[in-house]
Length: 453
Image 1 (cartoon, rainbow, N blue to C red):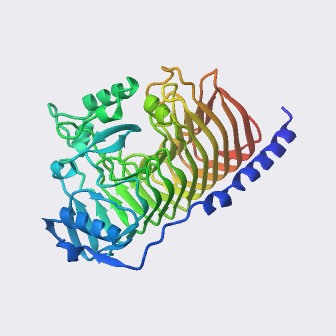
Image 2: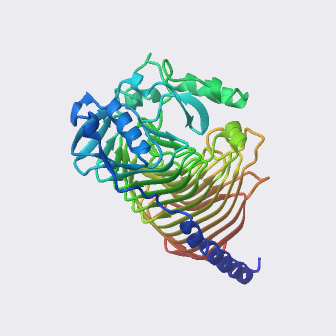
């Protein structure tokens, strides 16, 4: 290898890559709303934590929309409700001393609505907060959205004793297998009906086929499953949000086949991935075939989770153009910092991924991992492609493996470049299998300098 030429090419390629970020940010514009307030208590809601406010939220949402838009204000108090379905041009403002607490009555989440479960479309219980085809919507304020998931409700459906499941109780495995089989057999989505009598947990906030979305300032906690997971949406801003929950699969933010996303200044403390970028699962993801793309991740703080910034595993529609800058990860209960997970059942392309100024203060397993053997492994016909990954100014402390990259011989991980990275006190510096065009420039692991591999 001509190392000098490789480095020159790397510097130009990286500079050109980061040069795209301003164009992407120019496409991400938070929605604005008429200066018009609709107070939920004027529509019959009572913030005593006991009264059912489902109908009050339905009526106030409708009124704000029909008036041409505005702010739905939730004043101080605890408001117990079923699902909230957004209409266009509405900003749900949750005041600082307010909590919206979601009911544990399953009947409240019927009738079923179209949503995605682990990247597969179906009709199921409504997400706790939902929209379909809405434009200009927001959740703002300093209050709390409480999904009310716990080891007696929602979480036992995972089928694990640490989340309240007991031997002999029903859980999600059978329904999950049925859904995935339906998708692979091209059963029409309208016939994939679950809901009552089934055990597939909904996401907390799932805006669907919607655009111009803002979530800002609020705390989101204790979801049944994925906490914030927009699907097939465009123009999304997530700013200064706390996302907390240690139930099963309680990922923090999972955009799924979405475009033009900014997530900044957020705090994550989760039972699964903090951020997981997705684009549909297996045949259903290929049927829709819409990537997740143009994503900017800035100035976030990540504690517990399976992964800090993750791409996959529901990746069949591909992911591209991800820019992560100035993010901090700090927990011995965070398994992996920067994580890619795919396999030949998923397929898809992961490309043009940029990490810069990442600080990993503590970690359990890998600092950086690309894994093509996630879950099913090499058991399918859809060979994944992973290429063009650039990591700059990464500093980490601890962990079992610094850099782990494992691919199939027929599809090596290609064009991965580490620049100005320092990894302290890692047990194993790197494990590499089928990687080509790997460049190290000014990389130090446990005090040993690496210029090339």
